[in-house]
Length: 122
Image 1: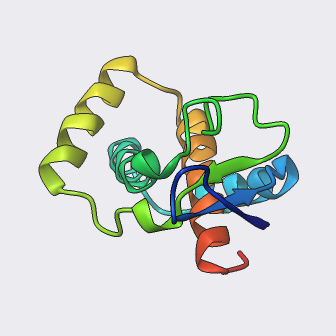
Image 2: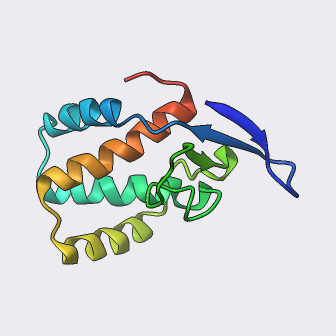
Image 3: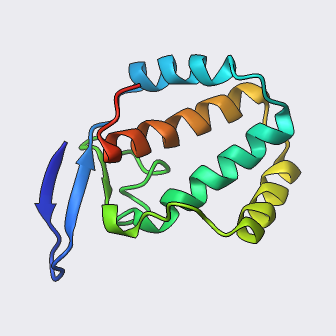
C-alpha cells in the first residue's frame, strides 16, 4: 500500500494493490458463511455503500481496470451506511438477480479493500 498526496487536496490517497488470489481466498471464506442469498445481497449493498464515496475516481474503483491499484480516500469511508440506503441498493441488486458466487466475489473484493484500509489481514 502506498500513500500519495491528492492533487489539490490535503487528504492522503491510499493505493491498494489488487490481489486476485487474496480476493479468491476471501471469497471462499465468505461462501462458507451460513447466510442466505438475501443476506449476501444486503452485505454486498452495505459494503458497497461503505466504500462508494471513498474512491478517487470511477477509474480507480473496483469497476476500473486498476493496474496500479485501487485508489481511495480513507477518510471518506462510511463506517455504517444508512439502513434505508442499504435497503434501496439491496433492492436494486436483487433486481439484477446476481448468482450467489458473484455475491461472494463482490463482497470479498470490498471486504479485502476494507480490511486493507483497517490494516487487518484475513
